[in-house]
Image (tube, rainbow, N blue to C red; front, side, top):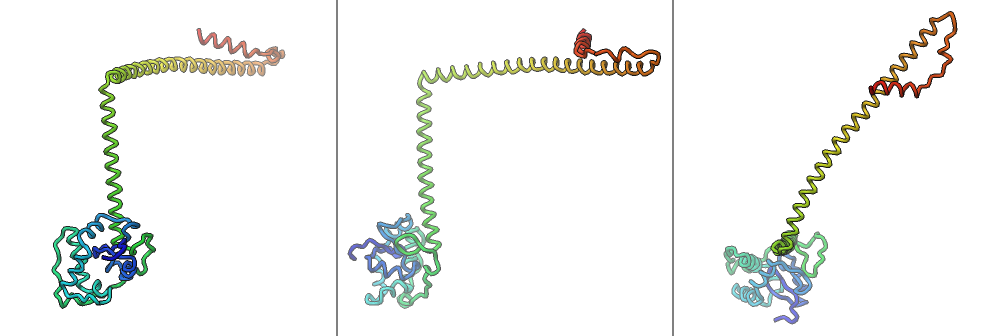
Length: 265
């Protein structure tokens, strides 16, 4: 019945006006967890608490246990009756067994509580600062929604892609093009394999020729050096007349050419 009830006490399942929302925030989140109807995000679990509860339902419950209507506003929410109602509402929303209610005498007893908001990090929403457990549940709900949405979108995109490919494959031109492409791919692979084998054989021939050239040059050089060593030895042993060989200029290039020709023969 409150005007402009754009606020809510989630765990009590009731709507609040702006003034009452300020008072409820002072109770602590274990007593009254305040959220803005329009400016805060809501999880499915929180929405279920609101649809299960209601302002009239809470008022009737307090009347049934003779909670004084003229008591301070925080009194009825901090009694055993208030704590029981929140547990009962939560059990109903989750489909669990409802706990036994307190007796009329116990219902009026106050429950000692510690404000759960003390020492917590700053909350960026507009309602009460959630406890760590409530914040974690809220984050889990958001993650579930995000993952569920991503999964559905992925399934939809995958199905669309498969349907498009199936339709494309049923087209006559596409089947012919695909078949021709497959044949061309096989032909190209065969040509590449043959060329690779041919180039391999040619490389082997060139390698053998190169080896023979190096081998011939090396043997020619050894023969030349051996011959020159013998000439020097002969000249040193000759004492009658000076050796004319030491005065001769050796044409090395002609000698190596001659040696290579002899090796090839």
